Image (cartoon, rainbow, N blue to C red; front, side):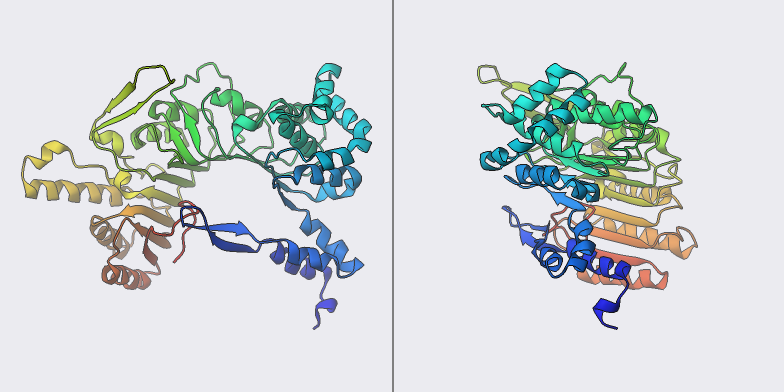
Length: 479
């Protein structure tokens, strides 16, 4: 059968595959990263004939990735072709320098933009400020926020919104989200009713975290919140008045969060099914990774949590941890000391999480360190203590687990895998389908092959690799 004779539904599926093509490239640290491929192929298909254009256009506009200088072009497109706005499901904003030429081309739509601003602001003064921010003689850092807010206001079926660093977020995007909350809570049909996922690619704790996320978290349709490179100091969340039972996915794809902050933070999300915290920062972390405090924060999620990622991508700190820095140029050097018990560095038993299907974690933070006092008792005592710790970990894995990813594997993983395979031989952990091991350093290929062979006997897929070349974060791994 020729392509022309295929039903339109199948043609759209084929065209959609052109939309999601990705390619691998190297970043500035020589690590492999995946980026969206050019849309040139899909654009060329749209230009072939009128029929194909009708089929391809919704696919072409379903996901818009903002690039510098393209924001004003896209805004002009929406103002001149309002029919395209309904196709956009995902919008990734990148607040650009203002393209003055393009900005001049949308001046013919001034009346339409002023009407949009008045409708959302419900007040003439603020709407005029918004209007002047776009068309005024002096554009500043808030102009990107104002332009992006206008774009969002024109996308009625938006489901996923990706925003840059919170420092670039201004008043106008927040106004739109608050307007959407009022409409949804009042049961009034309106725009943004499909907005479910917001991702912010950076949060620095100059402002209260909850003050920042409250407009997004209060939106009843919202289910996914994702934050990249989030830095949070110790913060008191009492009296915040935010409870978000509709949020099911909370992710910190990179984070440096104060250990005393993580537990009260999670208390405001009582229905999470997916939680991810990757302890890592582009500029280095200020705080140690203490999984015990994290465990305290998710105790109320034992019956709902289905997927959990708790990965420390920084060094494993010793018992005493210090960080020194100048808060201001003229200030003396400030020193913070963290002295904590070894138990605080282990997550603890997992068998209470009976709905957990996928677990991704750093091995060290599941097993825990051997207390220093044990080393004084001799080599045999150390080996016995290590064995008991590893046995306790394997025995505590919930029977519901289907996939296990262990990071920073070292020599201890051999004993853990042997214990895990023993459980499988005894007819336990039968739902477990896959184990991925990511080694820190040299990989013992012979032993890894043995685990793979034994796993096959029990319909268990076992993969092993080192972490060189890993770039897209712990959730992106391959055999």
